[in-house]
Image 1 (cartoon, rainbow, N blue to C red):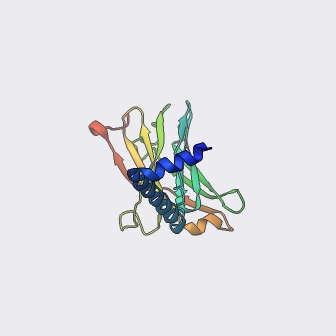
Image 2 (image 1 turned 30 degrees about the horizontal axis):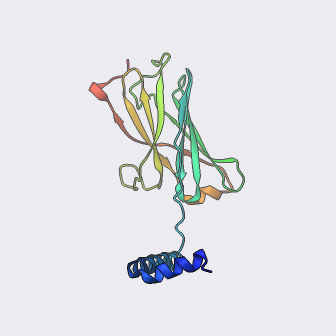
Image 3 (image 1 turned 135 degrees about the vertical axis):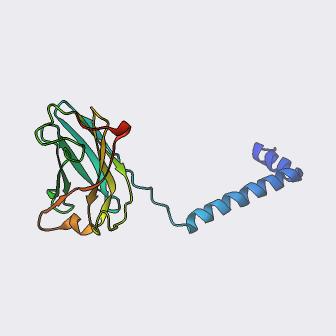
Length: 191
């Protein structure tokens, strides 16, 4: 009495082209398996989400500060004063240990006392800026903060001072943002 398995193997042995295909597939499968064991596993890249939000009086955004250590910063723009304040959490304590402050009104062309109900956009972008004589020797985070005056379209860009030692600093660090440049579409001037 012949079983199904016996019939399969008899047919398999009789068909030489099937043997070649089966051997090729087995060699390929073994090669892939051995290759996967010999290669170190590749870590997935870290992903950072840059977010921003605004209402009638404030705008807020986040920006990657130290990608290697998974650290981001938060920045808040007060429309009434033109002040950007920001902070970075200390990796060990979970408290804000690095703070930033800058006033954007002068950079965007406002005269003192002139800004009445200004409206702004605040977003973060990615930039690997190297220290240079124009912006100073202090290292910067791989992010830039952009502030746009909604009336004129004038947009100011700011670098974020950062060094990896700040991640675990025991004493608070206060820094000013670094003004980089201002773009003025259509020769924009504040009203």
